[in-house]
Length: 113
Length: 111
Image (cartoon, rainbow over all chains, first blue to last red; front, side):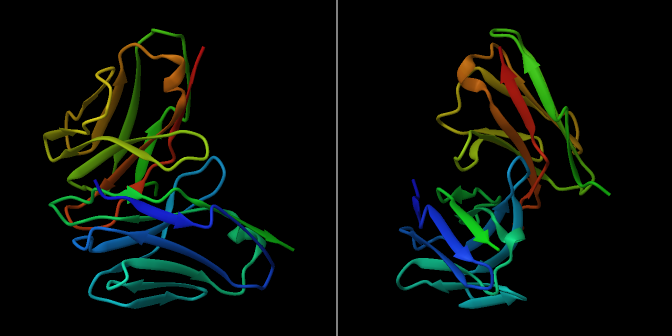
């Protein structure tokens, strides 16, 4: 089945710095790419998503870029804040009538004040 | 205005004692999913319902079963919990083509 590689597994930044997390995939049929943020003991929460007909999407301090040719997509967080500290999961799916998500392995982001 | 509700939030059971976890949704989504998430790992899909159609993942153990009596409710039954089944169980919902929304999860402890 489809496999998603996510890097880095851990990322430590200073408050105000930018953070970038990258995921690569192999199946060119993948067409939906969400990113979830999961704080300790809480549910995964969708923070941004992108579809394969778009190369970039931005929502305030968060952006996602998609390179379909190279089969990778990245999450960019600017002006990081301590409350951005969490585990971030990339995911993807192919529309087959329902959203079967394949998750990356997660990135633990720590933002130090 | 909770959209995906899971009860209980914490469940303690004994080794081998059947346990049922519940999920309800107010979104009227036609697809409901059950995931198992162990510490520091990504959620792992166990099965999903597309309307009333049940779809099991190939590697989901027979020990896990599910019921969906109506659009709003979905249950996860673990027939004989083992120590390895201790995890967070997440319910999620979506329409056919849109984003999945997760419930708060039920943390299961097996003694």
